Length: 114
Ligand code: 5GP
Ligand code: ZN
Image (tube, rainbow, N blue to C red; front, top):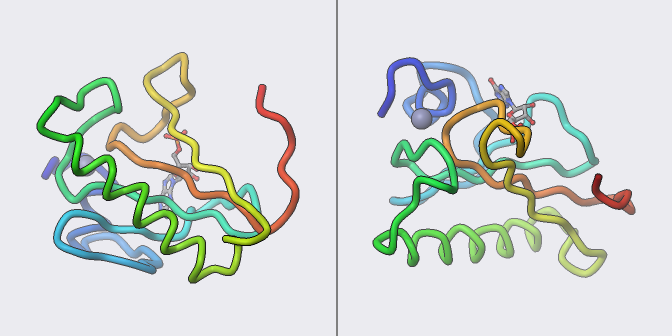
């Protein structure tokens, strides 16, 4: 938990968040500024700043996040039509919130990435 981290504060219900899934390791909520009809953020409960900060101990957690993404794709009806998982890592990767998160985007054809 980081007091300054908005995602930690959403997890702890100190800030509002449209939470759509949670378990003992992972929380998912709607992005406040959606870039597609379905735009969710899937994050670990533990405050890990970026993907570059994970270790071998986090291998199972990372796999679990992708499994949760697939479950949510089903729940939000984009599993058949397709979806995209995005992680922006660090400054050059375009990361703005430094609590590891994976974007789940879908519900319309998405453009090619930059
Ligand atoms: P990044 O560029 O770090 O990968 O993306 C951060 C994402 O977090 C952005 O898509 C942004 O819209 C979203 N975001 C930023 N602040 C909040 C917030 O307070 N609540 C929610 N639900 N999403 C946020
Ligand atoms: Zn955090």
